[in-house]
Image (cartoon, rainbow, N blue to C red; front, side):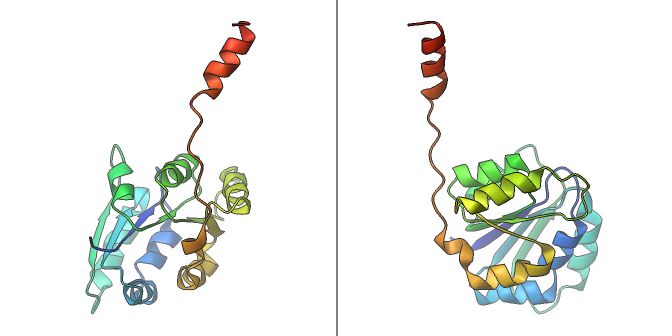
Length: 168
């Protein structure tokens, strides 16, 4: 299987993340670690992606980008590493698939409640959290290779609560 990085920005855009992961410096770091495919879900940052792709030279890597899909699950399954915005859906889906995850905080968002989830998940060792300013350093450090596996959901909890409330 081709070593693949999947990047997702969710339903909005994250121009700085798209610019960084399509930069020559980042692509060279990616290639040096054996990655041969980069898939990017760009959201509304598709224009930034398209402009960046026109400038890429001398990188032997398959790079695929798109704005939206109805489901990102297959791209996540096919990846070896996921870099994501701090959206709860993206975080939980990545972790449930037991994929190494780097979450990049979009510091331009006001009242970014998603940061709390990302930081708490990092404190539990499930993911690595960073920003645009330190993403390349995090990637080079391989800190994402020694994460705690996310626990499987306990599907009996709801039934147990319901039974307790109904005194069954």
